[in-house]
Image (cartoon, rainbow, N blue to C red; front, side):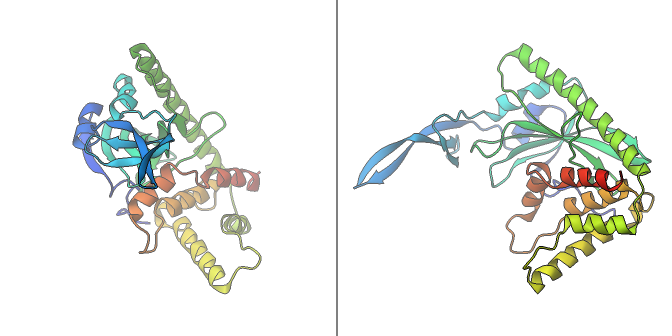
Length: 302
């Protein structure tokens, strides 16, 4: 782990330095509109409408995907309009659309100190036009020294929230106010959990148990699969033993730091198409094993 490591969104989308969401959509090419259109198939040389489905098309003719006839597309401008009413200094740093149809806007808020480390709160707003992703916001604290992303949910607050869609100004203002409260509650829970985990010590036996939990050897695994498993364990241990984790090595927080480094900077084989987008989606949108691992850590150090 070195200072040259970056966040999962560093190499995707459009890099920005904006404070207005309308400007963000224009500069990132997300200010298009979409429409739901009839879908047809051909049978015996005749065109027949598939009444149970619709095809979503952008105003430039690009196809977003095929959805059910009950699906109502949400324009990006409408989806992200509530952000106007968030009474907080948000600087938008990234925006774009993945090949899988995830429309994302990433903003950053204040920096805060947790256990002597600088963390910056990032907000990831998402939308889509193919039914794969819901309108939502994820809270993602970023440990600046090594760009580790922490996507954790707590009993008191979650990392990701679905956003209600409304065209009413008062309702949008209410959603914005609620969003601010959720961000504040989340970061308080995050800081509280970090301080608690830093006090919970782990020995070499517990580290081994955690490794076996994260990378379980299953019955009937081939020698090649076992070797790959051992290689992943070694990658995790390199992150855990890294220089910038020395202050927390031997604690549950140190193990969690190692895990977030391992996941955030996961390497893919060359054959994986668009690895940067895949890494971003896996660490932000797709449920990963951070939360179950955190729960196991709690039981391990209880």
